[in-house]
Image (cartoon, rainbow, N blue to C red):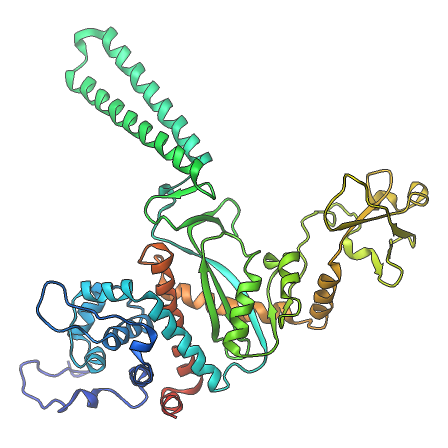
Length: 479
């Protein structure tokens, strides 16, 4: 044993530090948690009492349980049962809670019953970052990512899934009925147990058929044509891989590009981002307290009416325009090849011809103008690359100037896409690595929003500690 480091005899008497505080260094992250909790006013944030179940003991203070959860999410221990064990054996948790050991039901009930207050505490840390001038600049990177819910894909039904499953059950019943017919023809040579098992399977399949018929009516009555059995609020969403998808939630975050801190976040159960530009832009503008804010986003957020709604509100979106025509892959001219002259109100095509606005037909309604040139298109040498019709028709939205202004803003920021990817993808990657294969432990939008607020609060706190150090952050919070 002389060549190895030797441990102490566990039966030997030795002196321990006289207090728990001696075990916690000055730069330990738990000191940041303590100071941050001291600055919060739980009653003002809306926290309620947390009474131990079926006991005569007094209630636990909300700050104690919030401290316990914040420590858990900082150290990737979000489960209430695991936090119960940590409170009994972890010296850092003992230091934070004053050696209190709430049971897992009390811990879980606190998270369930104090969702809005926990979300307010998360926003309070963002206010702290703003007051410390951490959110430098008036630019945020916006993106959304799909997080898996408790609901399994097999427990989510759409009209197509129900019809497919009904067809499979009908086919299975037909096979078992055919097996019974064969058994009847074979007579007494077939064991009675076998026919009994087949009959039980047919009865189970018929019960499943009745269940699917009821589920079919529920799916038809649902607003979005989906029914999730385990988590009613979870929805089936497509992911980046072809033919893949999850049943979960769409997490929206706005991140500051300088320090990669989350400015604001939200969770929705819509599988797309097209309607999130305005609400997330307003939340980011309010969180940063800026008069105007540039929002960097990808083309998944592109919606003409969303961009129009941002006009005059101080939200300046910068995102590439979505091109779903597929013309570039076919070698045809795209929209950018046609130059608009606002003074003359006409377009100039790649061949140099002018496309003028045509009179609106009586059967045409809406806010789309049409441009064309009947005289030039027939003999144009570039017609094969321009249109497959007799002449080129070009459409322009009446509020197209708003989209063109956004494009000019994006052209003035050549690194916008790279900045957005390097900023927001880093946060999503970190959160998913922390949360593991089962991101959410609770069900419903209310519970999921609470969980994500705790995760975001832990992320921002750990990020601040990494950037500036725990000692500096403690002094900054106290100041």
